[in-house]
Amino acid sequence: MKNIYLNIYKPNSINLKKAKQNIENNNVIGIPTETVYGLAANAYSDISVKKIFKLKKRPSFNPLIIHFRNLKNLKKDVILNNSFKKLYKALCPGPVTFILNIKSNSKISKIATAGRNTVAVRFPNHKVAINLLKILNVPLAAPSANISSKLSPTCADDVVDEFGGKLKFILNGGSSKIGLESTILDLTDKVRILRQGAITAEKIHKILKKKVLVNKKIKTIKAPGQLKLHYSPGIPVLMNKKYPKNNEAFITFGKKFKDSKNYFNLSKNGSLKEAANNLYRTMRKIKKRRFKSIAVIKIPNKDIGYAINDRLKKASNK
Image (cartoon, rainbow, N blue to C red; front, top):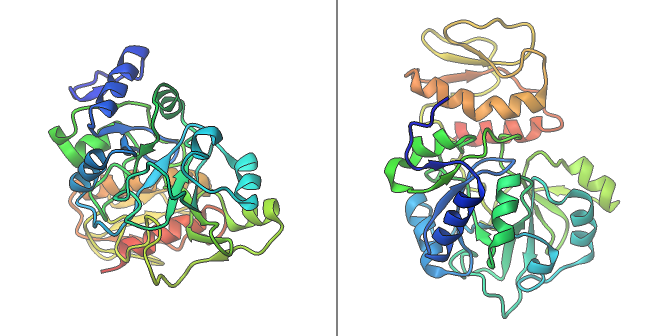
């Protein structure tokens, strides 16, 4: 399909160099990751980080995730602990973010960390993001490429839908493999999941051989995805419904349901991975078709289903 957008670029060597120049010039660009697309900028630059917050209309108390190339780069800014080292070896690069204590001499913008003494760090597992980080001398602050509280984008076209001409440069890495944001894991005290994702508590427990807590009550905002309203398509979302009302979109799951003009099946085969990958894409499609609300069938609460239900619950909050 021909690219009709002038701000979407193929991730070849020439355009990767252009992306590098944009980052060095304190500009914000769109990049693909295996989870969702991100708004990327120099994590060491207050000027760059401020631009991310402004573009996203993001509250200043909500910290950003910092993306690193490798462990060598991370050690310059962050204090590593044994739990992190075990998880890094088993899971990275991959769809997991770690909350760690930041070094006093770290160059990471205090705006990116919301002034906290902790920082959220991740190692993306997407060829384009990895290749970009390889040619940069700085880590990337890269939250999801959406307006704050709205649906995350899973392809370059979604990023254009969000920001139009406000974002001048987007690297096109195809559709995101996972389609939901990373698991966020706080390692500063007890091991605690702050946001559900593709990496589950069960998997983390197997690696660490210790109890993994799942955060349910949020006292302070320590990481992205903790605001009450999040991942919203901009219309009401109603969970655990058996059928829709008249003129209501119905998100289904499994073989029992056939497609119709208002039925949208996340996975006819009953695959939770496929459902996760289709969730945001489906909700965007529903919104574009001008439905006034979305009813969602009960989604199994296991594996990545925990993350799907977390996103739906946040989207359904008022």
